Length: 79
Image (cartoon, rainbow, N blue to C red; front, side, top):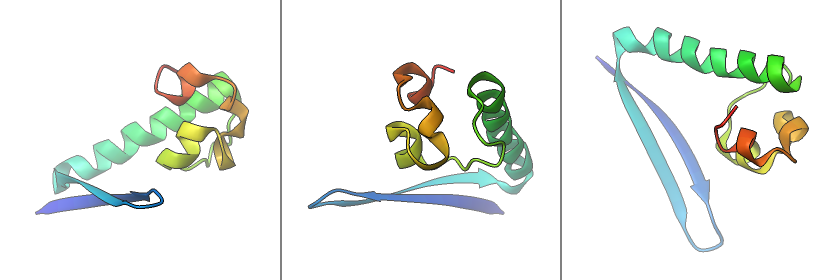
């Protein structure tokens, strides 16, 4: 079985949706890897350990990610 994770985004005149399909045996390792990213950010930048990985919030340093708002490299993936 394949599991699919969906994400959506929009601009003033466009709507986007993307999906990531993965085999069911990879779902738990994927979730653990994503949790590890949050743990690293918590250690490095004192983010909330329950922070959610929402692309818009991460990219713009909002919501759970305000502590890295001035840290552009951290926000774009260079923890």
